[in-house]
Image 1 (cartoon, rainbow, N blue to C red):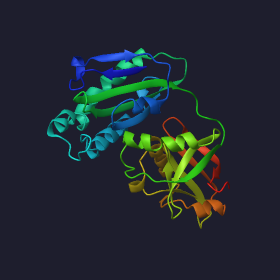
Image 2 (cartoon, rainbow, N blue to C red):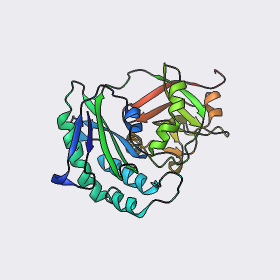
Image 3 (cartoon, one colour):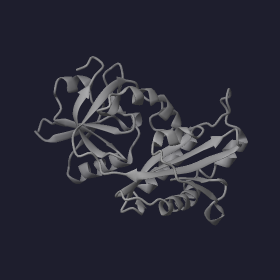
Image 4 (spheres, rainbow, N blue to C red):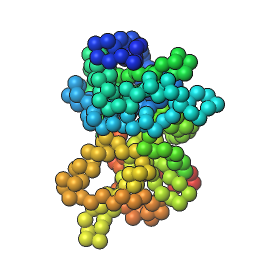
Amino acid sequence: VIVEQTNPLEAGTQAKYTIRHVDNTDGNKFILSFPRGAYTGMRTVQKTAIVELSSHMKRLTNSLSLIKFAPENDDVEPEHVSNELSSFRDPTKLEEKLIPLLKTGLSSFKHDEQETKVVIIVGYSHKEQKPCFAAQFTPLSAPIQERIKVEVENKARDTPVVKDTQWVRERAGLEKSKAKDVNEVLLTDDAGNLYEGMSSNFFAVKTGEDGKPIVVCAPLENVLLGTVMKIVMSVCEKHGVPIEWSFPQLGDARANKWEGCFITSTSRLLLPINGLYFNDGR
């Protein structure tokens, strides 16, 4: 189900929606069907609530504040665009718009799967001279119950703290070229620093000098803070497992210096990794 607000400047009972039942459940195609904007992927819990909803709203407002919606061949966002997007950049006003949209979609979408994945996009159409505000609701099947394969590619995001649909366009080539049995592509740089996956956070686990486990993750200023990542952080704190905020190193992976590694994301939850595959085939 795709729900789009046709009068995006309104909120509450004044909001009007179109509801489309579609066969395609590809979240990337949904995102790319709209002009550039901010997006976030959510999941339900017990079918009616959204996991870490406040984090998703903060992610949207922050991303929208950092994206400049300038017309083509210009680098300045027009004043009228800023005015029309102001309610989406305000956390309180965004909540007034988002909650009714979510309720409309969840009540319209009926399926047999356990939970629902929700993708939200907020953008601006210079052609239609108004904001775009829509959500896609698709079945979310149970996470994979086995270790996964990941590929490693030398590519890093320019602005990792922003959920910009431009990144979905940029990563399309990596999505297309990865092997069918590969679940995710990890991003690295020339120095061998591992950042994150295309749509996930990455963690390595090593043994400290005291013989206890340490979780290693790229510094938060270099990656997007995912909602499931926040849960991992909370669990580590609860159980006294330290997190080292430094880049996991490709050299350590090749030298088998880790006890293991895993990725996290909204749809995957937490998936342990069986093997990292490099361009040289190793």
